[in-house]
Image (cartoon, rainbow over all chains, first blue to last red; front, top):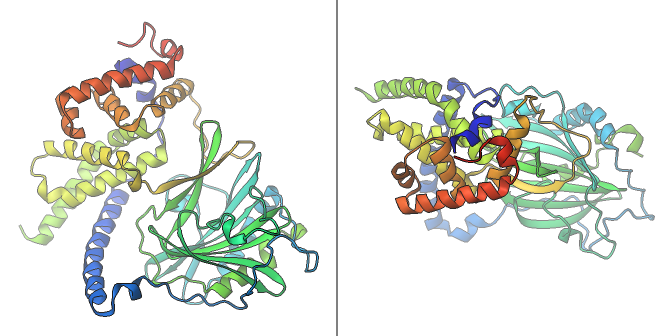
Length: 285
Length: 178
């Protein structure tokens, strides 16, 4: 039976993480485990005083102008026409500017850098800024920026896609892929806001791996743009599997400490989703 | 020895053990899961657990058993995977994980695809018995089951592998499975 495995015994392998990296990761994990034990002890003590519901209640989300009715997220002829969703090649060409726009929008007090695969897969050189997968149903492209402060890290991301349709005019926008851009999170709140005549869906939630997450979705003609922010590091990868491409979310692969709070308020994230600088020139009109 | 001394010695021993065994551990992880990224995650998880348990492992020989066990637990426990499946699209143009070309690539792909179709626990038995070449008793201990269960799982796993490989089995192994 051993012979069956012969092709695998001779396989080429990607570079192994160095012992220094493995040791650093093990130490950090050990340190965090000890810190969590202390934090759990403190949280339990607080819960005994103020009650668990108070601890579980999410902080309020500030909205610039929440619409009481549920407006359609489909492009409306009565408003400024939504920009056309860009082609994947345009996103690719524009990806450096997308990253710059995200970095510029990060509030003072944080450090922001473009997040690339090399950040969590050492020695694997990557040249792209946006990660794009093209399929029969459209494409999806992600540009990620790491947001850091006091040795803790979170992420802000811009996701362009044409793989999912906009919700129908009579549909509840919060029922349609509400976790877009924050996949895997437990959704706590979904609201529709109007900023400068444009409609944005704001979704907040909590991800067991990264803490609080928030997305601002703007539906474009033929696609969408989601800007998301998370307290901890979350990223994407694409891998082939059984003739298809599988999108996956990586949750805090380096066991980094999450930011103490989301780097964006809801209104700032909604405004960022509407920033024309995120759109490639030909589609931003 | 003081705590500081223990910490330094643990780090030095950990580094030495990692350099000696990490590549083999990651290869086993890869045979189990068929994905280098996940294999590296599983390997790091196993070595991190080992680091945290170092003071309880008195004998050097115990390290191999411990690292195998933690690797298996991490592999069998989906909740420990940092990657979550999201959704699938059909491939058309963009490839980002550049494959390495070599003459065994097709055979490996066939074999890994066949292994992936075997249930995870049964696959673990096959890999431990025939990739790691461990005796039945040791596999039983690692998987916390009886030797009889290991034998039956190995038999079913081989049958699964034969069924999954079909004609490809002959291509991989002239004369069939030994």
